[in-house]
Image (cartoon, helix red, strand yellow):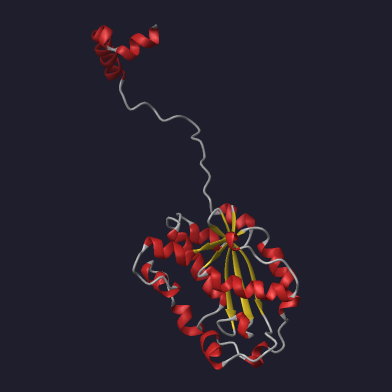
Length: 233
């Protein structure tokens, strides 16, 4: 099962008001395990980045000026996500921005049904509690230290969301961090310890005398040993 954990950063809150996507970050999960595959792009929004957005994302108009526009990254982005399920925190927000960008290029929108919204999952699981990504990280004891240094970022937030999603889905599996950190398929395969059959079976724990006395006790049960009677029948 392939899933893509996705996050975006934008110049504002409403694409209908001219706001644009300025960063996309995606991480691949297979069978709920990070593979290390990722997609990341900074995007020139072809407009200024408001001060409030700069404060949150640390992305300025000057920094983004020489980055590719969305039309230049669209194919690579769509190819990476393929037809996989998208894991998004507050999916409605990210999808309306991505679909606004795709609409400008006359490309089909991303269907809302493709998204697994972790915010909705968290609200159902913890009614009345904050369902923000930061709050969920604190709930599951996921470190936010990088956020303190770097602020928000699509790839960083996707990595945090992947950890939150795995917790919401039932918790991390043993060895997950080792597998996720492995760079190659061979390294990830080596993280699993195969079951090696014993060269010889273990000796029985019962002595010959104990086995003999057990058989004698069973024989004394006669018809009461219904499993023995049925087997012989």
